[in-house]
Length: 483
Image 1 (spheres, helix red, strand yellow):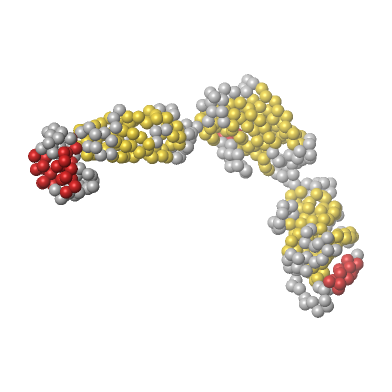
Image 2 (cartoon, one colour):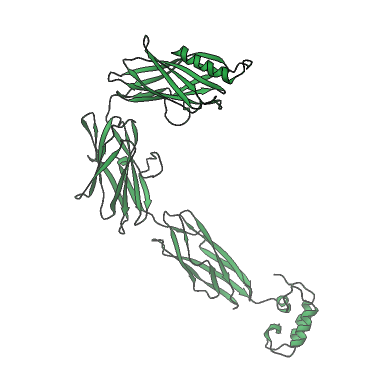
C-alpha cells in the first residue's frame, strides 16, 4: 500500500512542481499525548484498561509538501489501533491506513487533494489506540516517516515513542478544602467575611482515579451560616448531585454520582459548596466531617470527626471588622494672626478587614471646618482630611475633634486641638489695601478715614482714627508686610 501512496504523491507532485525544483530541507516529526492545542511534547501518560489514547503527530519543515506516510509499531496484546484523523496542515487531506503484523504495525498515508502545505509546521494528524483488558504498560513507537515534496520523497527513520503506564493500584483517597475561589487549590482555610455574604468552598480530591461517585458531609452552625448550594466539579464525567440537609448538628450531605464513566484524572476539583452568613454572624467554623468514595465496586471511607478535626478540613470564618487608625493624637495650629485663615491635615487609615465608614467629624472649637466629613474606606486604604480654622477672636484656643465611625471598638475617636490667635502687627494693620507694601495708596486711605471710628484704620485700637494712628503709620511707611 505504501508504494501506492507514494506513487499517488509522485503523480500529484509532477503535476504541480517543475522537474528543476531544488531539494527541500529535511523535515522532522514529533509526538504529543496531550490533547490540548499545540505540541506539549508529552510522551508518557497513565492509562487504564479499555481507555482511548490519542497521539498527535506534529511536523516541522514541511512547507510545500503534498503528502506524508508514517508507520507506528505496537504490542497487539496491550493496545489496538482505533483510527486516525488528518490535521490541518494539508489542504483537503485524505488518510489511507494499512495494518499489519510481525511486528504489529499501522501505516498511514496522508494525501493532499487541495494543494501543498503552506505552513512550515503544524498538526499532521491524530492517531488513536485503545488499551486492552490485559493492558499493564507498553510503548507505541513511530519508526519511519516519508514526506512527498517537489516530486521527491524525503525519508527519515525514527524511534519516537509514547509510553503508556498502567494506572496505579487505587490507594486511600484524600480531600482538601480551599476558601479561595480562584482556580487551583490555594489551601485557604481562613476568611474574613461580612454578614449576608456568600462564602465559596472548593473541594479538591486526590488519589481518586477510577472513582464513579463520592459523598461528603459538612457540619455548620445554623445560627451563623446557611447552606447556599453546590456545583459539581469536572472530575466525575456527567456528574449529578444528590443533596440531603439535616440537624443535630446542622449538616449537609452531598452525593456526587457519575453518569458518564469514571474519574480519569487522579486529582482535581470535585465540587464547590456555598454558604451564606446570617445577620447574626460573628465567627464560626464549617467542618468536613466525613467522606466516602465509590471505586471498583467498593466504598472507601474517610472519617474526619474522630477526636480533633485536622485544621485542613475546617474553614474558619471571622466577621470582617473595620479598624480606624490615625497617627496624630493632637493638632497644633501654633500662632495665627487674627483674621487669617489657617489649615492643618490628618490622615485616617483603615487597617481592618471590613469597610470603614466615617459618618461625621465635629469639634467643640468654633471656626473649624472639615473636608471631607463623611466617606468610606476599604481595607488597607486611607484618606486625608483638611482642617480649616478662620476664627477672628484673639487669644488661646483648645478643644477636641471627634471622628465618628462604624469601628466597633472606636465609634468616636478624639483628637486634641490647640493654637493662639494673636493681634495683627502694626505693619499688617497699616497695609490697608492688602497689597503687601505700606505705601502712598495706604496713606491716602488713612487720610480719608482720619477722624472717623472705622476700625480698619484704627491702628492703636482706641476707637478713633487720630494723630496717634498717623504717627504709628509713619513709622512703618515703606515696609513690606510678611505673610
